[in-house]
Image (tube, rainbow, N blue to C red):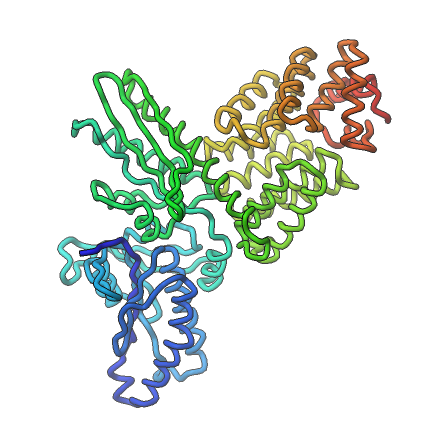
Length: 581
C-alpha cells in the first residue's frame, strides 16, 4: 500500500441534528453555501484538497502543515464573519482539528492514524475553535503569529498512547492576515533527514542523530528558512523514501541528507543538499576527522555543513527569483531580487532594488526582511555617495532598521541592520550591543560578524576588527558583502598607522572587487600617508571616476571614525591624495 506524510484538517458542524430538525431545508442550503463560498475556495487557496465529505463535515489533506493551520484559522475567521448577521440559535458553528501524520492512499481517499487522530481531536474542539497535536505545534512554532494553549493529554478512541492536545489562539496578526502573509512571504523551506549510520555499530547511532539535531537547530537560527521540526523529520528515519515524495508531502523545497561512517578512530560524514522540485544535487561535501573528541568533531562538522547549506540554499532561491518575471514574485522573492541588485554595486541596480523593496513593503508592511533589505540598499547609497543627502539617507536607514526590529525582535538580520545603522549614526556602543545580540541569536550569521569588523575598525580596535572580519569570511567566503567586512579591517589598520597593512588589505579587495569605493578611498589615503604620491593620485583618480563629485565634506559624513584625531588623520590622507574639500 502507498503511504505518505500529510497534514489533515477535520471540520464538523456543532449541533447539526438540532439545526436540521428545526429547519432542514434552510440548514442544508446555508451549509451548502458555506461550503461552496468559503470552505472550498479557502482550502484550494491554501493548496489543500477535500478528500471526504460527510453530511455535516469534511476531511481535507495538505502537503504543508503551515498551510493546513493557516487555512483552518482563515475558515474559522470566515465563519465568524458570516455568522454576525445570523441569530445566535440559527448559526452554523464549526469545530476543527489539524494533525500531521502517516496516511494510507487508496485512490482519492485517505486512511490511517493521521486521519483518525484528526477526527478524534476535532471532537474535543469547542465551537469556533481549532485543536492541534504536539507535532503540529513543533512544526508551526511562531511562523503564523498564533499561540498554542495546552489542553493536556487526552486518551482518544483507537489511539493507544495519550495525545497531547493544544488549542490554537490568535495573537497578531489576525488569522486571515497571517494566512495571507504566509502566502506572500513563502520563505524557502528545508527538511534535514536523519543522517544514516553506516558504521554497523548501534553505539554510533547517537552521533548520527546528534549531527542531524544540531544541523536542524543551527539552520533554525536563520529566519530566512522554514526548517522542518526534528519530531517530523525523524519520522522518516530508517524508511525507504524518494526525495521528491518527501518534499511534496512536507511542502518543502529543499532536502538535506547525509551519512556517518566510522572506522577505528576515524569518522567520515557526507552531506548532500537537494532541490526537491527537480531532485538535482545543489551541493555535496565529505568530512573526514579523527575522533579525539567526539563532541568537538560533531560541533565542527555541524558548523561546516550549516555554513555551506545556508548560502547554497539562499543562492538557489536567488537564482529562482532571477528567472521569474517581477510581477510573478511573492514578497520574499522580491526581497531576494532586490538583494541581488544591491550586490551588483551599481547606482542603477541600487535604484532598481529600492523600487522593488518599496513594492514589497507596500504589499506586506509587516514583513521584517523587506525592511532589513531596505537598510542595506540605503546604506549602499551612502557608501558609494549615490544619494543626494547623506545625513537624510542614514536617518532613513536607521528608521527602516528600527521598524524591522520592532516587527521581529528575534530576527538576527534585523538586529544586525540596526547595529550597522547605529555605526553610521556614530552610536558606536549601541552598534556593538545590537551586533552582539544578533550574533547571540545566530552565531553563524556572517553579516553580523562582518559589520562588527566595521564597528571595531572605526573605533581603532584593529585586532578585534581583523578577528571579526576573518570570522565572517570563514563562515561565508564567497559573500558579496566581503569587501565591506575587509574595509572594517582596513580602517582599523589605518587608524593605528599600519599603512602598509591597510594597503595590502585594499589591494586584496580590489583584485576581486575592482570598483569597491571604500577600498579605493583607503588605498589612496594609505599611499599618501607613506609618501607614495604617484600611487595615491592613481588610486584617487580611479575613485573620482567611480564617485564623481566626492569631497572631503562628504567623506566626513560617510565614514564614521570614532576618535576626532583619527578622523582628521583619515581625512588628511585623502587631502594629500588629491580629494577636494
